[in-house]
Every structure is written in structure tokens, then in C-alpha cells.
Amino acid sequence: MKDIKLYNVIFPLWFVLFLPPVILITLVGNFVIDSLVVIACFFIFKLADIQKSLIEFYKGSILKVWIFGFIADIIGASILFILGMIDPLELPNDMITGINYDPFSNPAAVVVIIIAMLVSAVFIFMFNYKITFSKQINDKKLRAKVAIAIALITMPWTFLLPTKWFY
Image (cartoon, rainbow, N blue to C red):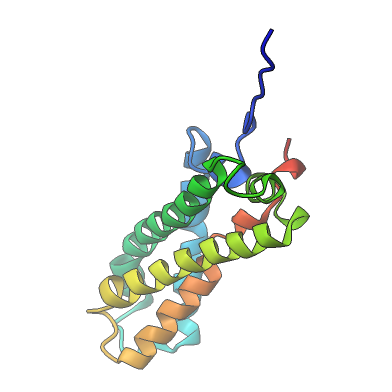
């Protein structure tokens, strides 16, 4: 009888976030967090000086911030998914296990996950700087500050959570 090995039977936590029905929780959670961050940015960066109202600013930006943030999270998760699916002969098995299940069990896995998070953050920044706030905030320095704040706060920090905590 052949030895059968099952790799990746349990999905990594960051992957589960994109599967039904968990995706609904993820979408709602992201919307709430994005809403709080957009509102906080309005006050922290004194956007009342250049906006008619918080409600107008919020309505004009929240859907884009939310959708682009989710797209950026998917881009970062795709990096981790591709690396997690690589044949163990090409990457050390403990690194793949770290990426998929316990980032802090392998220093290289932490680095890879942080890189994926930063890639997501760069996309969040670019989407918000170039698209979401391009017509709402004319001052490029101020727009960059708002986009950086949103990118850093809303990047996918959950990628660092060990899956073993939840299974």
C-alpha cells in the first residue's frame, strides 16, 4: 500500500478569511474598521478645512477605501497562497508550514508574511492616493498622509495570526 501524505488539509487562517461564509464576516469587519479609520483621518488631518462635511467625505470615499482595501488584501494573500503551494523540495518545509500555520515558528516565514502585508499596504496606499482621494484632497502631501495612514492601519495584520490558535 502506498504512503499517502495530506499536506495543507487545514486552511491557513488568512486563507479562510476569503472563503464563504467567513468572507461575509471579513467584509463586514473590514467595512467597520475602514469606516472608523476614514472618520479618524477626517479629524486627525483636519479635513474639515477642505471638505464640506464629514458625511460628504465619508460617502465619497468609504466604498472605494473598502473595496480597494479588500482587493489589496487578496493580492497579499495570493502571494502567501502561491508560496504555500510550492513543492516542499523548492522551499524548506518548515518555512511553508510557518507561512501557512504558525508564522512565528520560522523567522523566514515571518519575513515573507510581513512582505506580503507590505505589498498589500502599498496597494492600499496607491489605490487611495491615486483614485479614492484624488478628487477629494487636492493637496498631494495631505492626500499622501491620509493614504499612508489608511494603508498602515488597515493592512492585513491578520496574516500574522497563527492558524494553530483557531484549530
